Image (cartoon, rainbow, N blue to C red; front, side, top):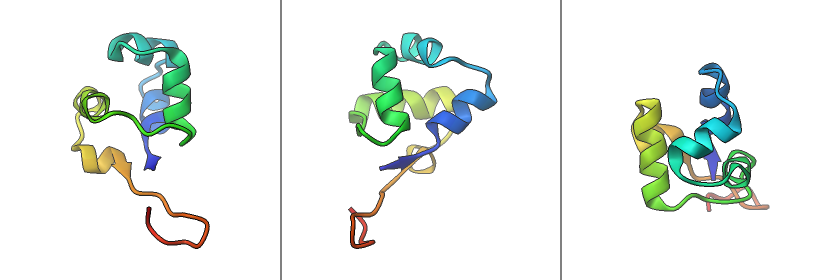
Length: 71
């Protein structure tokens, strides 16, 4: 899944740890979400969208698989 978490976090001059504390997760979870290694749970995705003031579909979008097809 592609997302804008890193861009929005850095735009707000937040460290990964600060975002993690605000979301109630570990810094490693934020790193994994930002790098696309982990798709957040729906409640976490909604919390992030609310924090950044965006609709969830603006913050997260489906990625593509190895063939270029949507996941």
